[in-house]
Image (tube, rainbow, N blue to C red; front, top):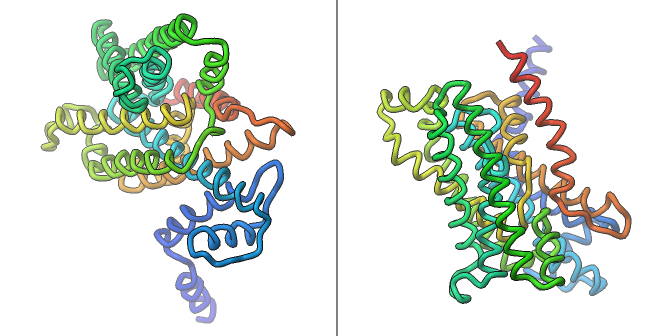
Length: 351
């Protein structure tokens, strides 16, 4: 009897999962702002936020106040938004294409977005009237259309062979758009622009400012909201488009909405941070391992893991080499490449 009472009491004290979600959303960026090559106490971070938002008047070093508010906090917020957006994009693509290896980077969407962004910034496409994010979106959509069209022309479908064809088409599309980006840089950029663009293409959060935070958060809210709105359709797509249609899902409209939200999120993140690989590939698999394949749980968990993963990767990029900040894409590749190999081996060993 006593043991039963203890168990019930422990269950009452245990916080429900939905209480941890806002805590994690708030805590992860604050820890990202506190951690770095020179750690700053969390109490100082709170005081800096109180000074800036509430005018609290805490006596802080102006340097610490500036580092926290103008540099580390917007960087952590954009890293979290970018991680969540790329992770959701990978989850949606893996479900729609029924391909465990699908993600924006591997399918050429990131490469296409990079080409579109470079066309606007370096080649002057649009005469200064087209924003960088719009150019990235057009490039992302063009890349995805090319990959899907090439896969269909080569006989790709929903079979295992079709999944392989999509991956091969994505690799070809990535190489094509990466080559176009290099050509534009070589032809139109000066030496200083070329160095900056090449560093940005590896994934760079150093130039992030508060104006980028609003754009990144808007993009990730739209992407996550679109995916969550269509969780039942995503569950149906797990069994193929024909099964989804037989369950009453308007296949064409839902696919168009999900692909557009995915491409838009990827384009916005690329326009801010450059191309960051492996987030959309690895994070959805980690989320499935934790909560299963039901998208009502999978969508929010994937977004949360992606947010935390990229904030941690950014901290590692700042402290791994003393006195130097690595491109964040280098860190995600160091983690994602072995995970990619594990996914390949598991896919081969699966019955």
